[in-house]
Length: 273
Image (tube, rainbow, N blue to C red):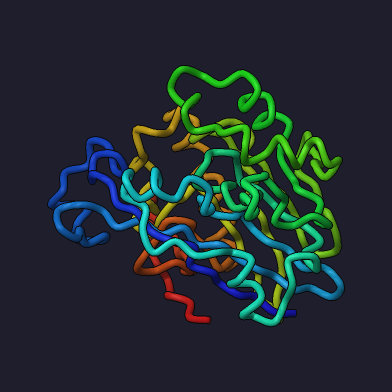
């Protein structure tokens, strides 16, 4: 059993885009700004458990890289090469779990070959998506329609590699997919065991460790009241069961354990791979 953290690239955004109405003097104590902006990571995970080799999210990818750079994405990596550097081949990946289908979480599903044709990065892998997220992708709201790109997921469906779940599901022993709403419908949170420790890949339910405060939410969250409730639901489990929480966008502390102090949730320990 092995777990690898892959930093697939970075971008930055205004503090208000990540923390909403929380004053800068408050959030910057937990999440230091760089050049007056919040640095954001795209933290992917490769988990090897027995014969299964699982990728959790695939980053923004490298398609249309010039446009991505103009939007502030930088230091982007080729996820296939990153996996090969860890001693694996993309064809060995058995499962790709997509927390949701916003372009910065699933862009690495596909790539353009030398002829400009789109190809699957993981042609042997089952790609897991929730029913509610798939419905939202097909009929997005006005607020998030620009976050979905057909080039990232349609080929997966066409190849017969898409697996849609309707409820919490254990896809194999000690590897569970749990559904949460708020930021967008039907986000998948992966919970799994490695070397007697439990890890929780939180996606955008809890995007950084600075977002442990339930009411610190992003204006990008489509359903803010649900975001608060769902975040508390996840944090209650993480604190009581001593889960290691893997955050997708945290540059500083991507993996932390959580403790509850009265009605507040705080970092218990920073986990280092």
